[in-house]
Length: 574
Image (cartoon, rainbow, N blue to C red):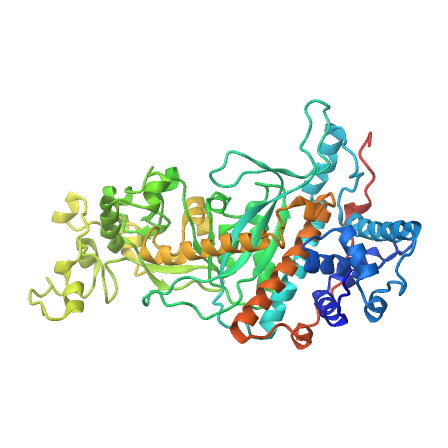
């Protein structure tokens, strides 16, 4: 095999060490029974080199590289014998040591370890799977996801340290992509469970054919289109910023928040988070509320039966995710209700006109979200630039001075647009046209100078669930939502290319959720390096060098404890 230069081995080792994962695994394995065997650092380095040079995170590829492709100096760094195995027995022995070393890592991280080489009866496999959903099991899974993200974020920290993310404004896209496995699903004929006891069926949007395996929640660095003639954002590498691998359709929102939280620990900016309808459908306490509390603005999409009037807050109507005047005409408020996806994506002229007509009735942002995610909004008839005429507002004004002037400067376009004669008029109930309504019986949205909407909407689940920060289907929403979603598709295509395909189960054949998480994380780490290296070459004509890798900040030393359930006895009958 071709020899790998020491310089590249050193760079990848530096990246691996600065992730902090090898030391934490050493801490987890300390004191466990049995011989120490090959160190976790060597195992991960072999897998990282295998993914980098072959596109496969397999133990077989790692073994060949470690024993036949490294030079003498690099072998010393990793504790590999200077002499390559010469006989079949030596080859088998050295490869088995590497397999056992990976097995020790997956065993210490697995909250419900079991024999992953054979199918179990469904009732026994169900007992093991339940452990993953227990409190101790979720704690173990959180540790696994944290270690995986430390690997994925190592190239991100490199880019941050070298200033390559200066042009990124904090916008992110969140999406789940299928991660197929080699194992077959449960068998109804033999009443045995799959070897992958926590896997399930992933259904992509619009597809009726499921993919058996896991779902990988990916967070990608993205940007929105600027309104100034589509001005582009400053250049930056569109890296994968987070990974969470789990059973499909389970903990969809929590996995996204876990990845966003770990990203936030790097001190990077927070902008708009765009997500598809799978995330809109989450319980607001699992996704929307914590996302706002992390500082993200939301750009969401809705199902046909979720569009139109969705609820209310302090008297204001929640219309397609934004608060509006309580007397917005019903025909305008419900124009998207029940409309098919194709109609919404390419609205007819009638719908376009209605969307434009209802825009002035939306509340205006008075103050952006504070540190707790609370936003302040103002009635569209208030402020120095009202967008509607409202008799109710005029009567409530303490300084009302009578009807507006009828003199209009026709040469001033802004003056013409701001004049009350050019603004739509709120149609109040007939009783209010003749007599002023009692202030005490009016909604706060009309009486107060502004209304505050907390991140959790004080328990109003409809407002907490559906509210977003741009008017749905408006030009602003399209400039925000569509580019970010395109970036999600782009990272999926990049990570599932011919050279490096995280969607090919043969490229990461080791069974079990723990192994699949670590191997997928290693492949994404290599994908991030490739994205960063390609971007740098295009921008500057140079590639990543030793200094770039050495600029990664040293990991923060934290005490890592093994999951309590990692040494649990098997269930009865196991």
